[in-house]
Image (cartoon, rainbow, N blue to C red; front, side, top):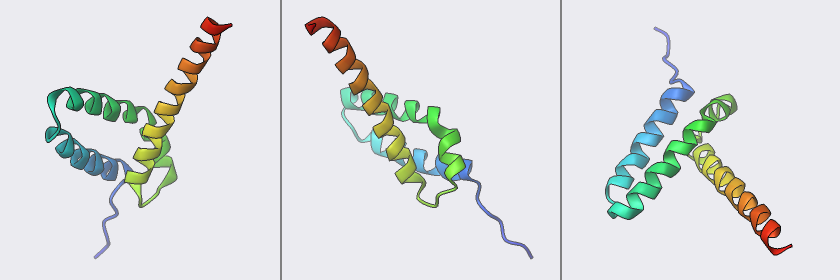
Length: 84
């Protein structure tokens, strides 16, 4: 008999499901922010799948950090435009 290899997409779904469970334990206002953060991670599913990493959760965290860094850069650019 052959072995079944779990697809990256399936692994991503498993990790996101576990993270969603954590979100249910958060206070309402925190939960909204948390759920939005996880939704944005879906923008990077292709890149996460491409890595074929067994540490899918780490790739999800990197995706969240990337999204946050993009927001910081955008705010910095807006701030520089106001200050100048």
